[in-house]
Image 1 (cartoon, rainbow, N blue to C red):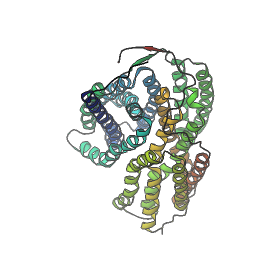
Image 2: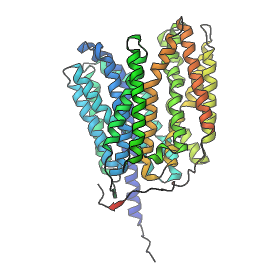
Image 3: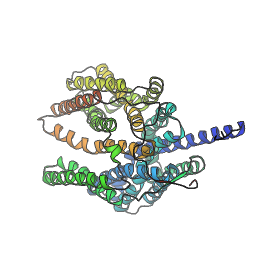
Image 4: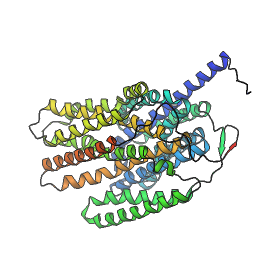
Length: 479
């Protein structure tokens, strides 16, 4: 009969302290990833101005977006194979190198290269943080702590634009943002190294280099293809790239089915619960960007509000969107059910977008604030729900892959939605009509997302999913 290991009070206390330090590392890492994402947009105009780089501005946006998308899948899989600690340190190292390179860049081309390196690291941090939460806590506690990650994200979203502007306007200039972020990245790396558990078993698999290569081609063609659709001069090239992307994605699926260690495991890709959550998350960005990007334009240029007033009008939306994941996590931890939250959330989002479609120049400010705040309330819970569904829909050994893939779909939505919404807006004869058309497109996509989540299976949030295809494992020392 096997002997039970007796854990002393001192050992239990030490374990609790290590988990606490690990949580601190995760919270700081998640904060700095979100802080940079929200602050860098403030400094970019100054970067372009210094190097007279407007001709390359689109590359400054598109290439880092591609790097972030690739990183979510690639590092998610690698973290399942080599341990969360090692891959988090690699991601933080790339983030740090990119920051330093950007801060000392002598040209726009070097800035872009630095931002791509930075994005490869920074883009992986959010999904890796959620994966670490999945490693540190048993299933019954994950929802609560996953929701709590919205606290550093919300704080970052609140203070980053102001601090980013202050740093950019200081004597340090736009380079100061990178110098300020760099030491926090170092602190985060130290905490990760001493507190995040290492890999206790070695996964005997080969890295799916062919899958990574085909995925990069497919993603790049998709991002650039849709971004070029909005300009008449590049529209045909954009259509051609979209076709190339479709072919590449078909090839990617064939490669992944045969790969020994696929970067996007078929157990994830063809899991009905996962793919439903991922698809609805992808689609929801058409509505979200309609509110985030186009509603301020509507309020300012159609309703005639000043920029300061518009900022105040959208503050309830921003705050609810940033912090609603916290109570969502606690509710999920208590109820262990998510389908009702999906259906209720997307029903509210659908109603809000259809009401925004009816907005005119005479729309009362209180109605604008109420509807956009309602949208932020409903949409704010979705990132937490999506990540938790990804965790519980697949075996634990695929935790990193599943969460990385959720973020990958989200980033693809972020890349594609602006181009298609821009096409809708430009197809109307006037600004008001174009913006109303954007809201209508957002409403229609919310209907599609609602139909999808109505069909989503409800998986258990109390236990891990049984693994039907576990890889060969060999004992190894912690990394």
